Image (cartoon, rainbow, N blue to C red; front, side, top):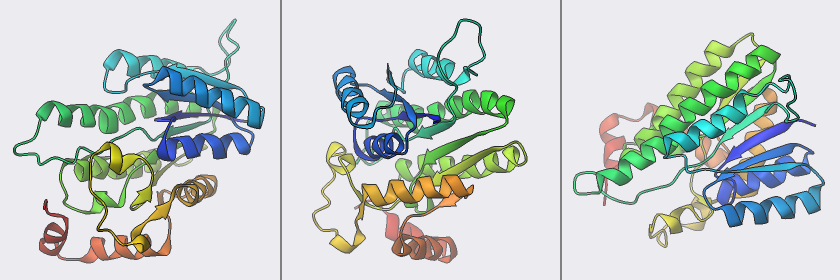
Length: 257
């Protein structure tokens, strides 16, 4: 059994990651803002999967909260008098869409998104790889998006940073026994769009992925040491198009409506 830490673990892909990892007999450290939901999920997983589940209530837009999660990730399991296990897999999943234009939007919301999807990813990865390289094993899984290849506002920009950062981290970790993977799903049936107040009613069903498939593909790629993970053939094709298409075309496709 290993131990995995999952951020944004009470809903959407994060919740699916928690369940699939627990089913695979991983102990868990679950991180989210809502303490009641955290405890409820932890209780259900403990009862159903028989694994240990720690919870850390944290808002990853708050520096002190990020540091508390980072401190947990730094533990090697070798500290005197410390019974907590070292985290062998970090899943940076927490994030949210804003569904607003940048020019006339609320900049505080944009800064919060930047903190959650960029700054906390950087800080938590740094904390995790320190103890993982010390032990000579471990894995990082950062949740990105196909949107990283588009030009559709600050969410796309945040996810572009996650993609580029993870690729660079993977190169730096080569030969250490630690890997880094970024998964880039497309539209996925979760609470994500509803929470962003985004109207997705016009999107055809063929465009949607299911969370269990996305998570299973991502975890399989982590096990294989894949750096860029794109679930489904349709989004592999879409990603290939976005990488080679003229940027003017990409900007037109991704422009705000």
